[in-house]
Image (cartoon, rainbow, N blue to C red; front, side, top):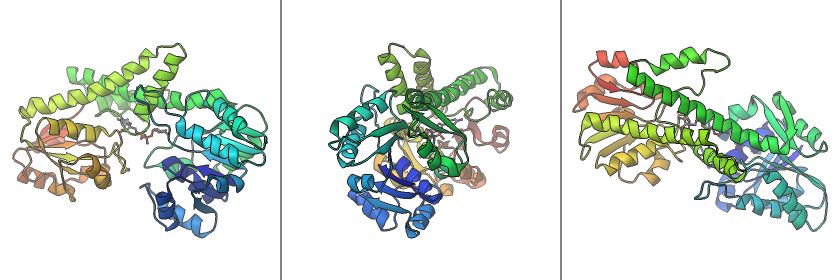
Length: 429
Ligand code: UDX
């Protein structure tokens, strides 16, 4: 199929590349000329495992190209995917101006029937607005179907998730575009769920809110564990083996961050409010998440007492493992809070150092994770990178003033750590 993707950000680039990989002809469009130049020159604007190789391969084989012209994309394709940002506004609602702008650009370039698919995360009923906008701005008065196709990609696993999805959701207002969209996704051999457009739009917000709820639930359980001497990991294993619950997203820690969960939760609460429903359950999810950080900071302060001039080594800056993304990262938030108290930070992340430097000016960035501990009063694990488990703890103990480790992601074995003479504090254990 001939496909164009408007918006070559994280979602757009992965989508376009993975479409090309299964044989579709793809044009990726972005208004950022610098980004398009970089991609044309064989560079890649984001780190995502496996993506660079696939971009190179599909560009070389002629199935994937890049342009700044929406017109060129629209003319070259039967199906146009919208994958532009939908950032939060100060009140938590969604800024839809990029979506609206793209809908107008598509409309003015359209000369025949097109299927326009929204992949950006949008409030329920946005598809209807996109369809109205296209009708209004399309001079040629040609027909068009607007479809919703929410994405469920996890950063760090985006290529894998795209190539092997649990399910593909397609929301439509008529039967007409269904066959073509099914054809687009047929190579991935995943169950395809066809719904009405409003349901598809809701599925995305409902799914992310549920996952966030699961994390806040286990974080709340971690408090009960701490109050009783129980171990949250054992509780998570025990409840997670119930197939109705499932073990994933039951890791207690510093709480969730990233570019999706916090934003989608706020948006969904706002959307519900506008529809006349006060989604108190989700407000509580937010509250627990914020409190989790406060409690962890209190643990640090209770142990170290005065933080001013204390030298603290922070392992992990990305909002989770396998990514260089520091947007809404609990680790960065934690660093800012420690700096505010006057602590002196030595920080390390396997992938996110460059991005973190822009938002964390006062810290010392250390390239080798084993050198972070030098002269530190305490270490903090803030991101669940598995390589931190290989930290040379013997060396760290020797070079630190005190062997204290605050494990915000429960990476280490508590009993082992204590046996080796560490003052070890984790979450819910
Ligand atoms: C999420 C959704 O998983 C994905 O389907 C959607 O498309 C976008 O949002 P992502 O933001 O990439 O993906 O991150 P995810 O792996 O879901 O983790 C989100 C946050 O939750 C991270 O900060 C992570 O550290 C935290 N988390 C996750 C926990 O604290 N505990 C867990 O058990 C799982």
